[in-house]
Image (cartoon, rainbow, N blue to C red; front, side, top):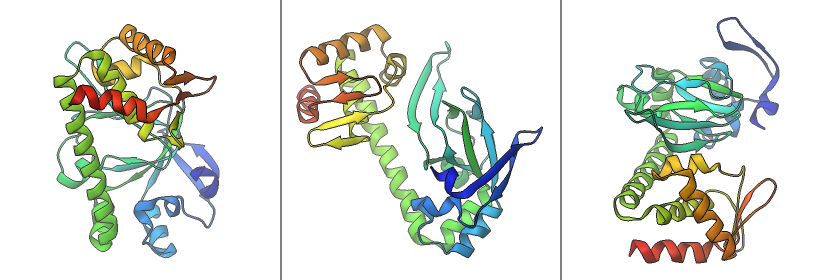
Length: 250
């Protein structure tokens, strides 16, 4: 874990941020975004950061807030979410150790476009906007990596909008499973999704019900395309799932 490489002791202050005793190795050294930075430069960047701990289900940033820090997940998992007028949760993405978020507001200075919630107890590193922008200006390769990340988000968003506009609910569930399969470890034609996605989480991503998700998963299991183990959802035949999705997408 990233934390084990950089932290030897953590304590929580009454206000929430954590005081950290660090080893010589920076947490940032394991992040691809800072791969071109020297040890001295990494230490300077990290010195400007604050460590913060969040409990499971605790909000890290709120939608429409005017904060502009960029957050890096040292330990735990988080979820990018928004809510409809009726209060229904809409999930955009899940973030794991090594991921970062908040770069949109850091770049354009506008309010947060979505909220981010800790899925489990998490430790994050908050990088001030001015330091983030200065780092991108000094290291063009880091800026390029951020642009590529934003391009992936736009492409994924376009795909999801098209699916929501043109596919039936059961096909949207299949498409979401395919998206998740692409982001997890694969063995030949199989993919292992860990932890097992919760039915309500899948439903919130594709605007359907938990009952529809359960029905689609049961159908795919009967066809031998997926298998649920104790700790993971295994897509046994990714090409077949992809073929099913591409057939309805046209």
